[in-house]
Image (cartoon, rainbow, N blue to C red; front, top):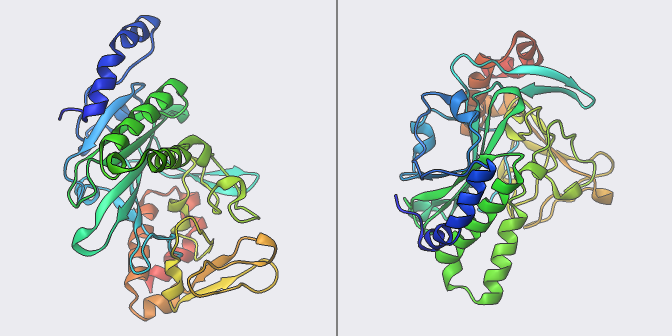
Length: 342
């Protein structure tokens, strides 16, 4: 699949620089292969190249490729008031085992090499809904990690997704990804029709959400104050992911990084504050006194007894993770699994 127009110009303009990089031993990207079911997940995760990637048919890509959606009891914030627009999908290697590591902030999941996860964000609703943004990661051996980002070539259902996969701690890779993704955004809607001022703000926003390494430190504690350091409020696991471990947590720090709190419409959710009472206002996110982080609690037992589809989806995610957990991990989540057994 050819690169987008401005990207092609950038590639041609930097051809001399590419030769120099090769001479200096810097690995550069190759081609633009479509992401397919991984025959060798660990081999892909251990790569050191910067690579163009694409998903030609994103509508059901993750289910087709063997991923399982991670559905936490407490929903993530959404761009829509009526449906969940952020989905987290995870795929573990067939024989991979999720270990438990002890940290100053308590035990944390450690996912095995070969694990791959994508955070998929949708835009629009009904027959106009499409994938607007993908952020993903692969875990290799000895802590090696690869990030990826994909965006649609047009804001429409079925649009091809295009982007890059790169080594987490390689600053040269990150600089090139940022540069070429910004060029891509400028050549595709809505960026190409924006005024210069609006486009500048659009690019600045995209850069602000592209600090994947800064946003995903390993073993991050739960924020005491809302959006401390601009990060999500939840804790991370030993790999730096937020959502998979919360699949087993009926009570979780509440997030507010999208405009709508989908938990507000769920009769099985209760809000609390570390001190004082939560403020719940129509059209606003729940807040606590002194900017403390509110928590939301999901009554899993009552939800399952009431036939809640959301609770059933949580249990499907729990079952998938449980099959890969170490014996220590299974002991830690025994109560959560008992809930799903009834």
